[in-house]
Length: 108
Image (tube, rainbow, N blue to C red; front, side):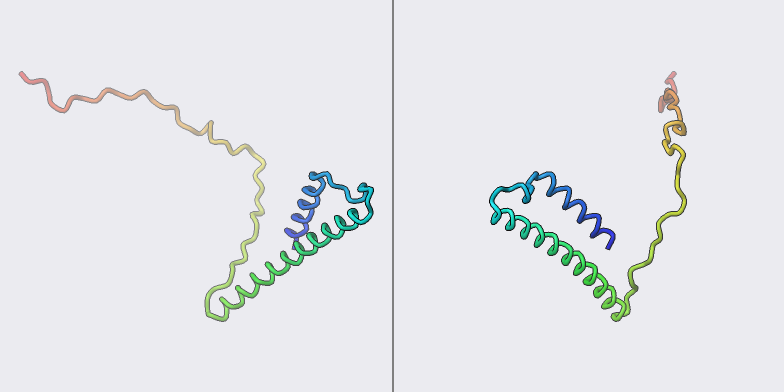
């Protein structure tokens, strides 16, 4: 449900980037039509997200009834890394390659 709220804010930002402000349109009929369309899009999106969540829950329940394992609960990592994790200092300095001995000794 949190994702739906986040995505809804994203949609609102995208609508703002289009720079269509229905309240500023001089013709009231067109302004009302834009408001109605934006509301329909928003309601459809929210309903779609709810249906996706419900659909996933039903899939999980069907899998449990079939005897399969359900979706595992994976908790986020509690350990936060505040230090630099770069491995540049840990890399080994490349040593110059040494000359290989010939396969055959010098023939006398």
